[in-house]
Image (spheres, rainbow, N blue to C red):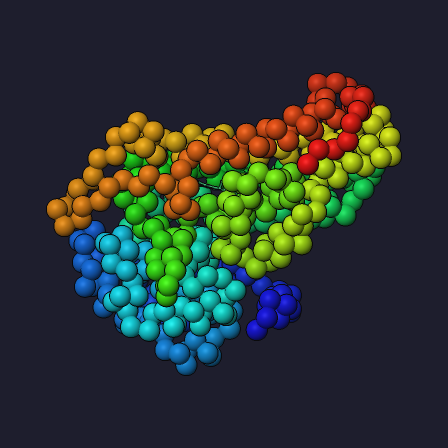
Length: 394
Ligand code: HEM
């Protein structure tokens, strides 16, 4: 099955991909996986290994599966990979054929040969079938906070794609901006939910350890952290497709392989092409349409989306800085619930970055907002755009 076959199947079946994958249980693991939290709590590594070997599919199983079943299988194996790694066991060293099976699955899923954020959140069933590492309310809420933000973010991304086709001289432009803001509000609610319901101390002393990278073959693959949200695709379309900042460029490229193939296609289509803000500014300059009231409304629409983005990033940065405050305070003491489980708090997020990257992204997007602000003064009455000078900067 190729990505376009998947798209065609999805249209034909009229299915919601997330719900469909979440509904599948190709490894017959529904009754087996609920024991994982107990094994993790008791540091029962042998139990985890036995369970992993019990649910591992054969080559023939994998060959018989389609994209959806393969993803549901990766999700379930993934909970054992993260659990074993939490106890410092490299899964490939204890599960025969794991490397080969994960690589076969990767070919079917168009994703890396391990579980991603999609598997952990939106492809994870709700209610009694929900898979977790710890079974705690904090973890359930962490999963929920991302799940509630993911589909609205994807919808907002598709609307940004639509916006790329609408001229800024059209009244439809601002209307689409408003629809984007409605979806993005739910993304902000996701981080507010996490702030309220996930103990950050529990996150850094327990949950964080399940998101470490694992070795598959000769390289490491990242754990299913929220950094794998396609937020950088949103940025890319809106303000950063041609951003020359090396650090942010490397950041984006790190996570491209971990996002859904549809998001990856959108990302690649726009690489080195102008984003919405630059396109808007260029059009205003070349056509001399700064004082057109419709154009002013369009630019204000873009500005309000940038503000929404900031309204996600500011509280998220506070959450991340609090969870990793031990690094900032230089107090990284080992946590030792049991002698056999001697762990140091992690200095970096599951994506390998320190919270400093969040300030850096904020700084870059603030710079873009300042540039945009030269062309739209939100405090002025509609229609009174700032006089133009110079050309759009990259
Ligand atoms: C316990 C809560 C959380 C902590 C401690 C945390 C921490 C972090 C850290 C340290 C990073 C830097 C990259 C890396 O992981 O290496 C990051 C990135 C990111 N996180 Fe979180 N996070 C949390 C919850 C969430 C939630 C609930 C969401 C979404 C609803 C989210 C979305 C993101 C995104 C999109 C990025 C990429 C950077 C950006 O676009 O600004 N995080 N997070």
